[in-house]
Image (cartoon, rainbow, N blue to C red; front, side, top):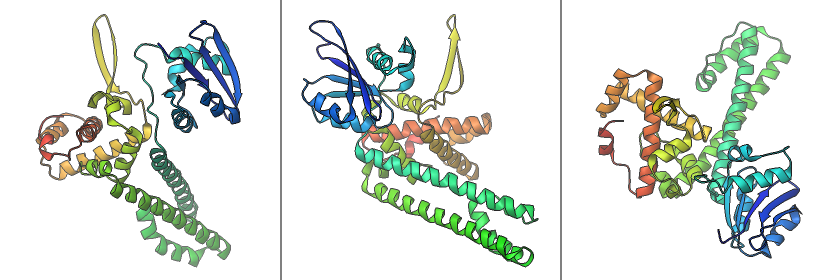
Length: 341
């Protein structure tokens, strides 16, 4: 390698560097404060900079790329086996340097600021959804203590809530009713916040040709389209559709010895949020197939396999179809789904 490989163990305040001088072969280590990191790299020749793909890594990667350095991000799970001693900053930096030079090592693509913005909206929405579930469950549990049962599901709850609260006002003291009204207002406020985030994501969908292209695929809607495009980045990062599906964790795990290989359930590696969205999309496709489908392969698959196996297989097919649409730059062709899974 004709360039110096510099590994960085990033943190909030102190950064540990590890590299080998190409001229002398000496191992170099150095600690830098946060304020001096960019200045240090600005005064060095272009190098290959490697760091773990953790909090703040993408922003540091974009900053270092502006100075002409090539930056690669590596998963922390790939680094951990190379920590030889106690876990210190110096040991972590050395492990990063060693891991990045292993044959076949895979790296995390550096995300653009626009990609991170979209994924941040998704994370905020997920957190709001969790908060809404907590608030509605609390409301449902309190009313159940007094013999008032609310249906499951957010939409059904909102429909049944007025009548249930009217019944509660006739039986329960005013101080509890006031607290329940406040709880309802919190639930409605969270719902409004979720709607605002979804409108922002819808704007991104309208402005992105890639999102619009994959939104034509059955089961792929607003959330899946925007999340996949923002997470994937450049589809050419993956050599084929199966590699993209494996990156999400939708391909079978394998175990074998003595030349005999067994395939197990899906690996569940990679981005759990993307995998969840694609599994929900696959359930939607499978449900529509039961109501009447134009895809004979899916009808036959439902007859042969359990429901969860069908959903995993369809999610795998959706991931591969998304990659094919993005890599070819062509709209989804419904005729392509007349084959087998």
